[in-house]
Length: 104
Image (cartoon, rainbow, N blue to C red; front, top):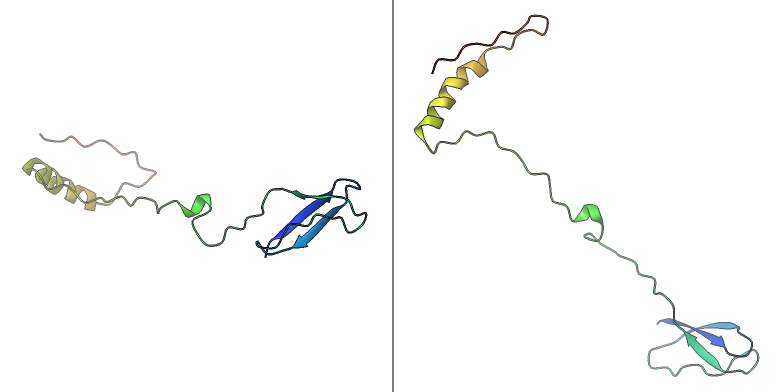
């Protein structure tokens, strides 16, 4: 059941009442007998579950794939020529690396 807040128009005292939706509104102040009016204020909301926060709506980071494309014969030839070079060990950091000439 909701809690309603009333304010007396004469003594300005505030009164809270737990009422059903179908109950009639309070009209008489219990302290001074003056007229009561409903006070409307912001409603407290509690978000439960997932999907309400900024980080809940984000998907996983896109995964990058490193598979070579086999749509044309030039891509396949380039992939086969670079595969053995990738298998060779890299030079040590202390030795300067020299570029290797490529034959075209």
